[in-house]
Length: 203
Image 1 (cartoon, rainbow, N blue to C red):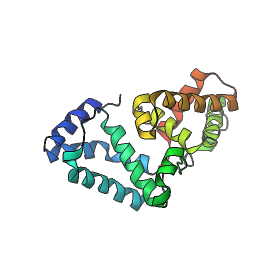
Image 2: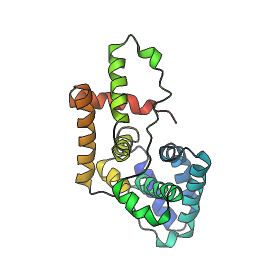
Image 3: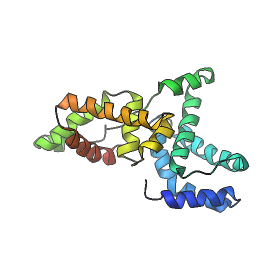
Image 4: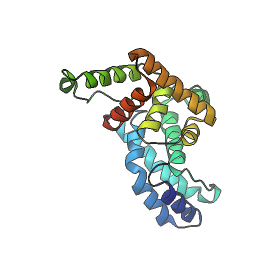
């Protein structure tokens, strides 16, 4: 559960009941994270901003057709992801690409200061984890990002990735195992490194 989940769910219900001001509050609470998330799918920042704006315009236009949800952020992430991916590929291949997870997702470690890590064994291990994460598939990176940066639950991640909850758990487990095998460290230590790395990602 992310920090504002209960408040977002309350505001979402108010929005569905006709209060557009509630949607504005949801926008203000989530727009920065939506932008950060969107940047992982495209380098075109104008496209990302346009897709976020279009997302909220669409919500207003389709309000009467929307359903209640306790996972507002997962819903917003899913909707934004679909809009960005749809804009960057041929529409005829959209559903196949979404199903396969065959789309660009860049974690963005390039701004980490590697010079500061040279004499620090822990930090060198962190850089090794970074390198291992970069070797993952886009879908695996996305799952780790949602888990360790945004703190989404497995259920919420499954919704964003169009997976069953157990498949979400397995995907993250396989990704962590791959990172662990690359740097030969235990699962708990890998999780600590991931929590250390992801809040410091570049965008």
